[in-house]
Picture 1 (cartoon, rainbow, N blue to C red):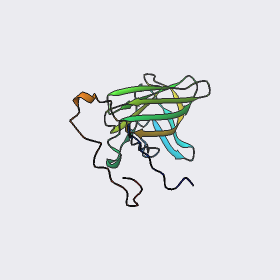
Picture 2: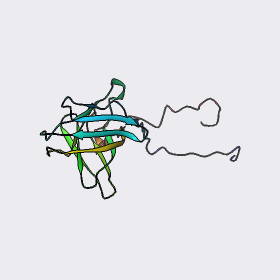
Picture 3: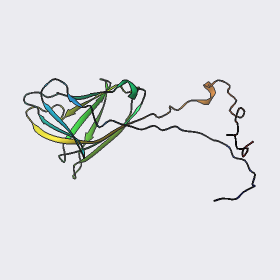
Picture 4: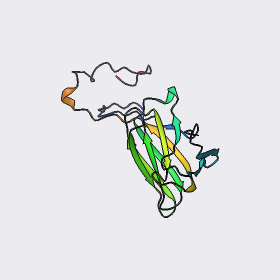
Length: 168
């Protein structure tokens, strides 16, 4: 479809590359023997028996080909009013709180995500329960840049036609 033999012009105001990475496999207990993790059709089932431990973790170490992302979206399903603490790169934290239907989501920006820790009911000992990791996605979000600090780059030249002679 469309109209043949037309001319015109347009201006590229900005361009954004989005590459989403799904991380619904590779989760393990971090050595405390608290978490039982099972990959299933509806996500990753995580059961826990914390015994006397307040801060045991389940973890995911990102494989080499998944490094370089700076935005995390995690979707969990669990017991209403409970929480899971998500800790990225061992330093930055975000809480996922389950609503009345048991749904919880968090979106946060971090520097170069390399690993993710989950703390079910963080800070509370002697509890058991479960939650489902519905999805974990990574994205790269380009940082805001002050135009005055950019080098002088001419983006108005160097464009070429793709070989069919349509664009000049």
